[in-house]
Image (cartoon, rainbow, N blue to C red; front, side):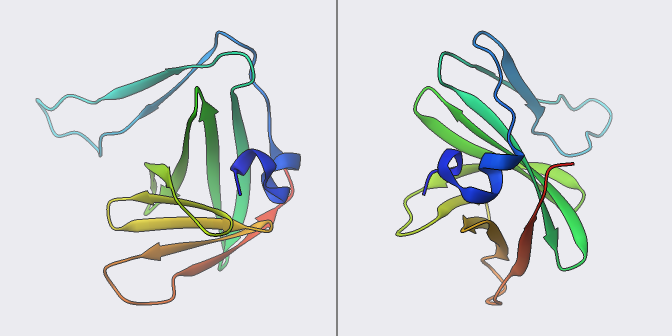
Length: 130
């Protein structure tokens, strides 16, 4: 299920006008002399950025879903920093991956899983906008 049709984020979303861009820092806290990388994604007609919040076992996690020009990705807070997750094939829901991390949202809720630890992941309940 595309995040644009996901029940939790549909109501928590904000649609941006054509011609705006979304940018995020993809670098961890840079040491002196290291550069940060900024990703700019032009948004056209019908493209959107959807803001959502989840309660992940007592901690609020902010997510921005981006649907732009046929690309879909999510910016998810993990360990105190925002990570870029790309959309991958899923039998149900919307599934995103970033390195060892998987973010899977379905029917208003989500799960964050560290794919290297063999555990069941952190369950996240969708929150109303705010």
